[in-house]
Structure formats: C-alpha cells, structure tokens
Image (cartoon, rainbow, N blue to C red; front, side, top):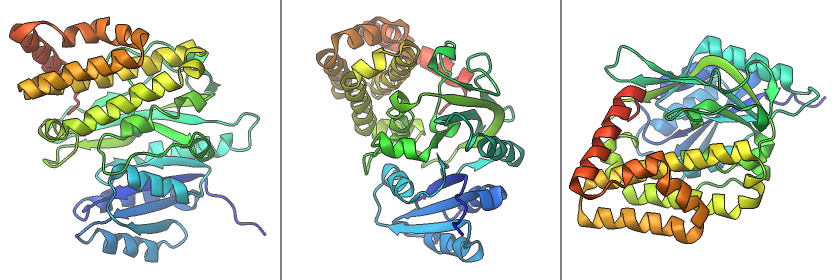
Length: 345
C-alpha cells in the first residue's frame, strides 16, 4: 500500500529562534496529519536545533528537521523546497504564526481541489500585520480584486490599489510548479521573499482566493529584517534583490507581456520594490546613497528602456525623484504617511 501524500508542506526557516519559534510550530501542528512541517535550523547558535529535534521526536509523522550551515533565509527556503513531499508548499517565518480556523479552511479547500479537473497553481489568502503595540491590526485582503471561492485565471484579476500586493505571507504554491520554474533563492541575502512572490508568477496559470485571515505577520523585534534601521544598513542587499527582479522581468519579457494582467501586476510590484529602494537611499541621505539611487535607475534604463519609463515616470517614480532637498523631504514625508496608513515596517 502506498503512503498517502501530504496535502501541504510548511517550511519554517529558523535562525536563533528559541524565544519565539514554539508559538509558530504549535500553530502549524493544528493541521494534523494533512501537513508536514519542515523546520530548517539554519546554523543556529542557540537552542533552536534542540527545540526542533524535540518536535520531530514528539511528532515523527508530521515534523522533520534539517540542520544546515548558515546560508540565510533564501537558503533555508531552498532546503525546504528540495525536501518537500507535500502537494502544496508554504513558507512560514519562525516569528509568525497562523490562525487555526482559517488554517483548517485552507486545508479543506486544498483537499477538495487536489484531484479535481483543474490543477491549482496558487492559493491566496489574507494576512494580518501583528504589529507590536498596535491595538488595531491591519489586514491585507484581496476582496474585490480577486474572485472568491473558485479557480480563476489572470484575466479575471482586477486592479490592485497602491499598497495592496501579494506577499510571501499570502501565497501557497503547488510544489511541483516551484520546482519546474527553477526557483532558487540567493544565499546570504535578505529580502528574497520578494523574489519568491515574483519569479514563479509567469508559471502560474490559475489561482484560488480564500477570504480568510490566515497568516499572522509579526512586526516588532528590534533585529527584524523589515525594521527600517536594519533595512538601511542592508541597503546593498535590497538593491541586489531589486536588480535581480529587473533582470528577471526583462529576460522573461516575451512570456510576461503576452499576459497583460500578469504583466501589469508584476510591473506594479517591481515599481513598489524600486520605490522602497529609492526611499531608503533618500533616508540614508549621504552622497554615496544618492549616487546609488541614480545608479539603480540607470541600471533599469540600460536593461529595458520601456520598463524604465514606466518605473521612472509613473506616480511612484515621480514622487521618489522630486528635485533637490525639498523634493527629497516631500518624498520622505509621503512615505511616512504610507507607513502609518498601511501599517508596514
């Protein structure tokens, strides 16, 4: 008798996560035998590996552990994908967690869709910004943009508003699709989650949106990669990811532009990432940082002039390139308003 294949693989990259990983793993265990949880101990120097092994010993049919040398978040995701046995695949960061009722609804939906007439490529659900100290939690939802409760294609997707986009927290991919598209995230690089939700898109033919608040995205640790002070200190890694996205869009241009709704979304997301790079460089404010901002725009122009015109002279591009100190001040103030309104960083 062949062993029943797991419905969903949840990969949890862990690096020195001993103080918070148990909340994450305990929430994932609510999925029961339908899931496999891969805890990737990415060269931790605290008790992370020991805690992970404890879960594997207690739940041998659900939890697996990978111990590896430190390679960064992307490397841990790669390791999880290489070893995944579930039909679908999701990444859950070790300081985040999931909501049980939404989790069970997603598993029920995936079970119903597996073996159906259409093979689902990507399931999308909402996520909640669990920002430390904030009583009112911002929810990223996709109602009125994505059809609900049915499989749909790119032609059925509406227009995303500014600040509304699909993040790693939103998506569950078909495991085989990620392997077929050759996704391999760079090692020792932060912000690779942007590549994770960008590079597979030309291979996604159909989607399903479930309007449930599934993923709880914690923001508040001082050492967190999305902390603005941390991001400015790692600006070269942000730019590296930004350029790889530019390269990818340019290299896949034929396949991407043949699907106008997908192309529009991918270009809009690239616009957001380029805006983040620009505003961080403006916030740093040194001559070197301002030169890097110019160099990034020139890189885009050299790579693809049409892409450059859309990014440079669109709404966000114009806002990020206002002349002089006063212009840069206006750009920063606008960014602060967006921070407050959308609840990020």
